[in-house]
Image 1 (cartoon, rainbow, N blue to C red):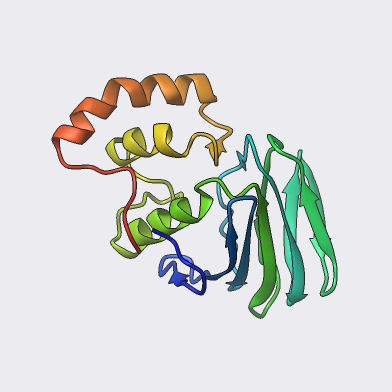
Image 2: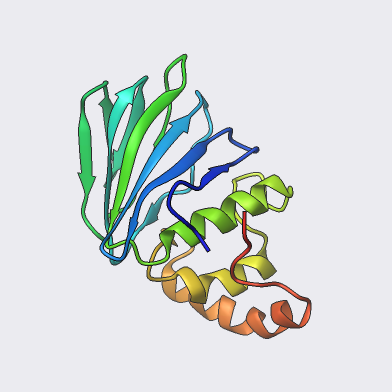
Length: 176
């Protein structure tokens, strides 16, 4: 279970997070993202507002198909259920303070995703493999959803695969 002050690292991407505020109505994360050409999957937070303030470095946010480059001191707020992703397009680490309102279980999602990355259990696009995804989709559907495949399709596939995934020992959360 996530806790205040906890630090997690994604060895696949080099991203580092520290949970600096962890309350029911708000999660704030001190985050460091190394430069990369890799793009996370386009996703939504169906019930959460999210965003960030850039402290140093450079980040590009793609929100509803529009790219916006943040400079130090700039901030962005993304309404719930809005397709987005971000990446560091600069030459140095990007340091930002991110937020999610309400917090829901997004900290546990990050813990699980980073633990899977560190165990080499994500695909080339940074996604959990199908049986792992089958147990995560019902657990984290209020927090995060990929845009493709469409949510109804992903949810239906997860419902079909979940019993097999459970029988093979897959769990929806994995402590970092």
